[in-house]
Length: 320
Image 1: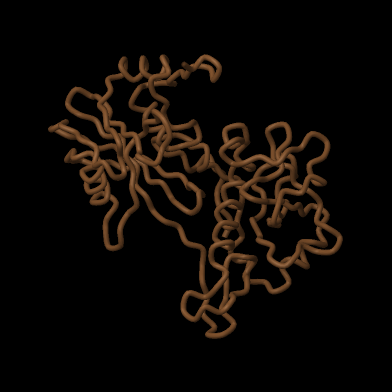
Image 2: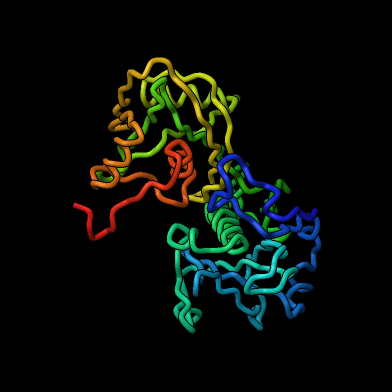
């Protein structure tokens, strides 16, 4: 089924960097047994190469190449048909080919192998959507090579979106792990940020956690915030979402309020939690006392939505 243009999907958080898309994934076309043979014969078809989390980027755009003469290899993935004109015409079919290592021979004419984190904010909607889709499905293939029922090696089918077990006939589909992420505010309209124990240095962000089986999103918001900070929140409100293919999460953004701001880090997931007013956060970031979540994250969008604008960070060389 075709999908509308990406502008139809603007959430209260705006067009999040990794939530943009301009691709019709063509789920009804994937079932054709001759899909790849058919589209390889089309002169408009292009290949997106992916290796070790990196793709070819040049001049703030993905480099999409002609199909190789000897075919797409053993496990291509059909990413879809483009819904806008970019470096390829509208309606072009895009195929993902995953390599074991970045191939320097493909990085010609100024192209370079770049990660999604490095390039996402510079890419247009088509390229950002393709990169996120490619990263997520490539991660799934790499981690799900065998049947979880019997352990037999599985084979990709339906354009690379299903893996079938030849032993028991079971079909297995890409997984997505839902996770909530929350901008918690108190009655003084301060924001609660935490520093995860696994993070280096002085990085702070909004609180987040995975949704557990049988749990609603709202319940997950209340549980995760209390577990990590000791703060009991109420009135969780959903704002928007974006995929986070590192490796397979869907981040669901919320706000929530508390009447009791007494906070303490759990000492396991969080090494510190702090309340910030707008002036305190701006001063802490500007001075280099703390860093906050990066620009491609939904966390940064939640923080700046509360702040009321862009938070300026010091230049890398100016950090103390």
